[in-house]
Image (cartoon, rainbow, N blue to C red; front, side, top):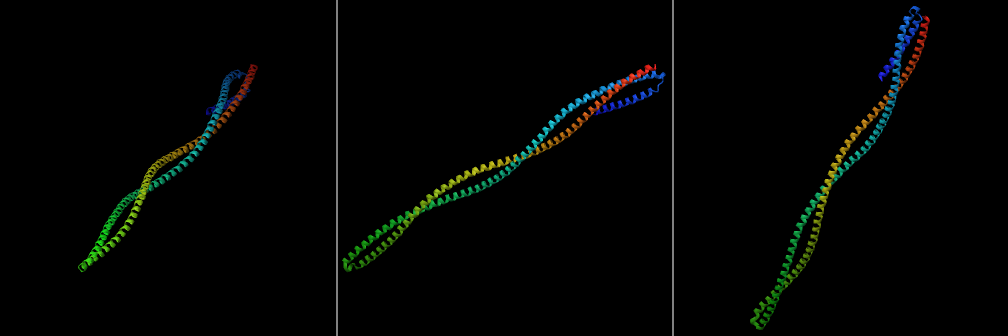
Length: 364
């Protein structure tokens, strides 16, 4: 571009010098005498040949400038169209990048929220796991105490059964004592009858027999009272044994249910432990995903910034290209104008040479 400008300036300078030279020659021509006409004509013709050669060269350069300018203008139009397409593509890319960045920002926000929720769920799962462990420990302690209590119940049941057996043995002994008392009472009655038959000789024996009878009756009465108490005790013992047996059965059922609950607690504890581990893994994965999304978001922001800078640079390039195209078109117009001037100079040069040759012939 600078070379074209310099060439145009040179053309203008040469053209101006040529006009000045022609004016000077025409002015000097009118002052020549006949003696100097031939010599001056020779020098003048030589100078005119040089000027003609220079004019031809200028004309060729001007045509070359016009042709080059037109080609450059066409190429500039193509480049301008290409720049427009690239600029449009960059603009679309910038808008797409902005939209992608906005979508990625929303996704990043959602992932961060998901990470927070996952952490909260992980915390809740860990809390539930801790409570379940404590509940399982308390349940195991309860099961152990119930097993101990079951052993105590079994021992008490055995003791009560043993007490019932002893009561039965006491009842049997009381029956024996009652039988013996009845026999003693019968023997005392027979002894009293025999003492009455003996008269005065058997009176002392009758007193002894009567005392024995009284003791037998008291023994029978006491045995009957003991038998009544033993029967009551046996009845209560039987009731207690039945209640203890029922209680033992119910306690065993409760103990089995508690053991079943304990096993369920163990399964729940295992499941919650797996859930807690999965939640911890999910939370860690979500945190990594959140960190990666933030890094991608930062990269997209850099890409968006670079795209914006590229769009701005292409806008500046488009302005420069427009300026260059305008300048090129102006130079082409100037070059065409110079060619027209050069053609007028050639016509004037031809006309002047003919006039000068005519004057020279007349002078000779």
